[in-house]
Structure formats: structure tokens, C-alpha cells
Image 1: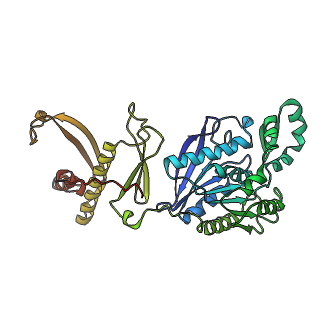
Image 2: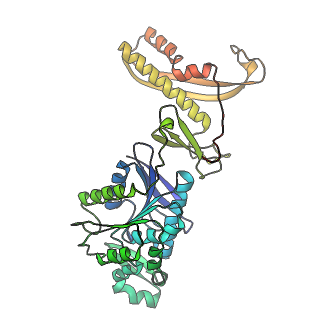
Image 3: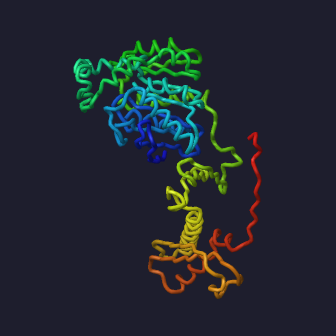
Length: 406
């Protein structure tokens, strides 16, 4: 599993910290994970479930709600509705940069949030809840000792899970008007309800209420012996394994067709992050490309940077292969490259005499106890790397358009 950290704009217009966990191969689907009340994206259960889902080829985006973890904003200004809006914003970001989530997963109050957000993410095929309350108002029991003060003063400091949070009256007002049962009844997606029978934070009767309110297809899995936070690794892995197995029936396969998954096949698409930002998929690997400032926002290497990187990597690999075959003492290779456009008449050994030409300057540093002949030969071999030879050979590029129906 590999992970990519980034930020996106949440419902309050502030940056929210996010992490995208990716499987080793191209994702067959994308999921969005919403964490429990006052928790964070890196809570043990979220991390373990995300890791297990990636083993099934599902990429998982988890993020910190406004005012929590690494995200900006004031938690005291949030409420359940803003949490739901954060989930929708996260789904929008996935859609723009990668692919829309077809699976929503929510833990505890995060489960209530994904149930409420599902109808605002049209691509969703399946929703799974873990230890979720049937009604968001369930969290009010956590505030009982401070509820009167919140009602009278408009806010209060409340200690939850050993940490102090400012809760304002708007939170109470908002959570009291949520029509959760109606949302569940009109979910429009397959539902999996997972709950521990011995959950002491959110009683298992909540699972029954969610299940009864939902229409088919719906399923229930008992997380027997687990606690509310799934702190035991085996419980988290079991939940994720069952979740992934269940979801496979409903999730579309977004992986690359076999003919497009081999070496040498690259897919580039706009990521929506900036005017020229691109999402680049190279087999099992992904990266971002962009134009440098002021044309772009420099969120990734430029097209010419990628070209130079390909030449530099090929050069270094070719030298390493040759030195290993010869058993020469080459300890380390560094290749520095720079691209520029120069007047043709400034190039004494170029065939083109008019206009401008592209020039790539390549400087190779070889570490190791090499003699002069070995160093000379390695510099000759550098010109024989496949990418170097491609740049010097005739290259034919054919361009076609994908039929609109595909």
C-alpha cells in the first residue's frame, strides 16, 4: 500500500487534511471513509480498515473533519450538517482528481454522516456503517453534563475522550432537526450495517433501527467481541475483509483494461486542481503534472521535467546495468539535466541552421574507484540508453479520438 497526503477545501472554506491509501495496482474502485465523532483520519480503526481495503484493490480517502486533526477551521463552528457537507466536498475532490467514490464507509457518527451524504454523491453504489447511531442525536448523551450550560450560555467546553472541545448551541439545534430515518429509507444504494453486539458507546439496537429503516439490498454483520473503536487489530481486519467482500458485488471495476495495463501505457487526465493540473497514471504508479508558475500552480513536474526525468532515469539505469555486467566498482550514479531552446546558429554541430532547436544538457557524476578508461566507456554507454536513442531516432506519433460512446 502507498499513501498520498494532500488538502482540499471543506464546507467552511478551509483546507482539510486528507490521506489517500492506494493499492499496489491500479484501483478497481474508490472509497471514502468518515471517522468517528471528535476522532481523526489516523485513528487506529480507520488506518487498519483502509489498509485492508487496499488489499482488495480499493483506494480509500480518509480525511479530518473541519477543526479536527490536521484540518483547518474551528470545531466549535461545526455541526452535523457541516460534517455531511465535508463528506460531499471530499467526494467532489475524489471525482475531480481521481474518480468518484462508489463506496462510502462511516464509523460511529461518521456512519451517520455517510448515510446523510449518500444522496448527494450520485456515483455511490454501496454504503457501509460501523458502530453507527441510528440518529445523530445519539451523541447528545455525551454532552449531558454540559447541555444546560450550552443552552444557557450558547457554548461550553466539553471533555470528550480526554480532550477538550468547544460545543456551541448551533450543534444542538442542528442535530435535533436531522431526518435520518427518511434518508436511510431513500438511500438508493446497497447497505451494510456492521455493529458489535457488546458496543458500550453506541448500543447494538441502533444497528437494528438502521437495518429496519433501510430497503433492500441490505446486510448485517455482527462484529462479535469488538469494542466501539475496533482497537483490536483482528476486529478491524475482519470488518474490512467482510466489507470488501460484500462491496465487490456492487462496485464497478474501474481498473485499466488488460490491453492498457502493461509497460509503456500511460494515461493522463485533467485533475481539476488547477487550470493545467494533470493526473498521470503509469501502470501501477500515479503522479501529478502541472505547469510552473505563473502559468500553472507548480503542483507537479512540468511535461519537460517528466521528459528529462525519463532520460535521466534511463541513463542511470543503463550505466548501472553495464557496470554490474562488467563488475566495475561503480558506487553511485547522479545525472543532472536541463532543457533549453537555443538559436540554431549557436549550435556548431547541429544539422539545423535556421530557427531554434531543443538542447538537453546532461551532466553525469560517477562515484567509485573507476579508472579513466572505465569512466570514458561509461560516458559512451550513456548515449546508448533506450530513451536517449529514442530521442535521436525517427519517432512517429499517431493520434486518434476515443468514440464518444466509450
